[in-house]
Structure formats: structure tokens, C-alpha cells
Length: 292
Image (cartoon, rainbow, N blue to C red; front, side, top):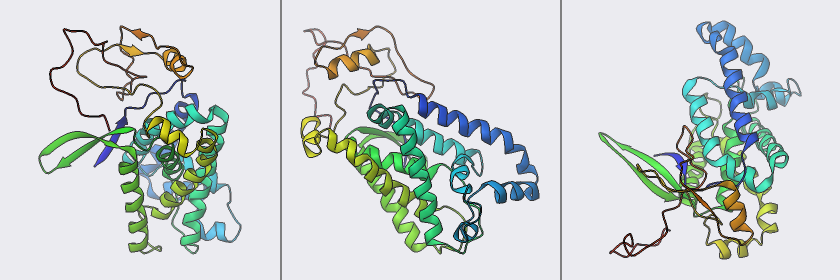
């Protein structure tokens, strides 16, 4: 099960999200040649990663921040950046650029500390942006619990995509992290499950003020847990697109304007596609089920 895009467009360009992705990629490319030399890579991680045993002693505290921008391989990097791309733009849209940047860094810091607390004597370097991104996922689940997320399923030779509500996708992901953290010895290497769980909880908590400012449960009641504007739709054919300006106009109560062009990114997340207006010739003969 692999979530790879959502149907939740944003009304502003997520400059911070794009900047974080770029920073992670550039930094990875800078030290990636060290992977050919295990000794050199180990020395690099010892200097810049988060080492729980050292942090417990009050040393190398800078690693709590620098570790967020280091990754253990290409798949580690690509997976994290894809999740940040899918979920990050919507939180940046709600919080604003600077608040979102602070939110991201605080989640990453809290995630690293959660791992340090659960394995204070570990000398294994902690690297990766997944703790901070877990915070983004926690905030996303609070604000958009019923936003549709396309999930790729691979079962032996079967490959298919199904849209699933965000609260299910992210809730299952969080449950897996907690279960894995409980069942995995903290002294061993591998995935830092408690960093993921800690980042998720802190992200949910830090997003709560933004949710309450919009009415809390009333915000859910108004939007039914869905995005507060037309959701993105994906099709092989070219569909009209609502621009970011159109989404902002709809938020203010005016009608959105459609453009006759697509606005898809390399990962297939358009800024808000809607079907053409209904007419006698294109009204479906079969009643559609609700989107959620």
C-alpha cells in the first residue's frame, strides 16, 4: 500500500515545500559519492546525524536539526520527498509560508527527540526527514480527514490504484509505526519508528490551533472533512482546471473560473481539476455515488 497523490489542490504555490525538497535533494547529491566508501560515510554521519547516546550527554545537539536533511539512500530520499510533496502543500496553504517552515522544523526536532528518549544509549546515527514529514501527515489528517488519497496496491502480480480517505491511510500508517516501535528492539538499527510516531503526534498538536481558528468541529461540519474547494480529478483526457486564483475566489464566495489547459506537475498533482459543466448531452445516465 503506497499513497502517491491526493485530490486536494492548494490555493498558493508551496514555495517552502518545494524549497525543502530541493534542499534535501541537493544535500543528498553533495554527499552521495561517500556511499562508495563506508568509512567516509560513517565519519560524515557521525558528525552530522543525530546520535542518541551523544545527544543524551548534551553533545552534538546540532544533529537534531541537520539529521532532517540527510538520507540513507535513494529510495529513502525519494519516498520521503514524495510524501512531503503530496501532503505538504496543503498545510503550507493553511498555515502560510513562514509558519509552515517553523512547523516543519519543530516536528523534525520533536521526532528526533522521541527517538532519543526511546533509545538513549544508541550509537546508531539517526538520519532522514521522515519525522518532520510525519508531523505534516498528522496535521493533514486533522484538517482534511476525508480528502481522497490515491493509494497504489501491489499484490503479487496485481497492481491497482484506489482512492481512500486520508484518515484511513494516515491512521493505518500511524498504527503501523506504533506497533512496529513496540515490537522492535530499540537498540537495533533500521527504521526509527518512534521518531515517526512522535513527529505525527506533535504535528497533529501543532496543527490544532489552525483547526480551531477555523471552527474546530464546525470546520469539519462545514466541509464534511473534505477540502473546502473542488477536489482535483485525474483522467487520461485533458480536463478544465481551476486556477489557484479560482480557488481563492471560491473561498471568498465567488464562482471559480475554469481554464482549458492542464496544470499537472511531474508527479501528477494538478492545482485543481473539475469536470466540464453538466449539459443534457453529458449528464450521466447512472446516478453517481457520493465522493466520500
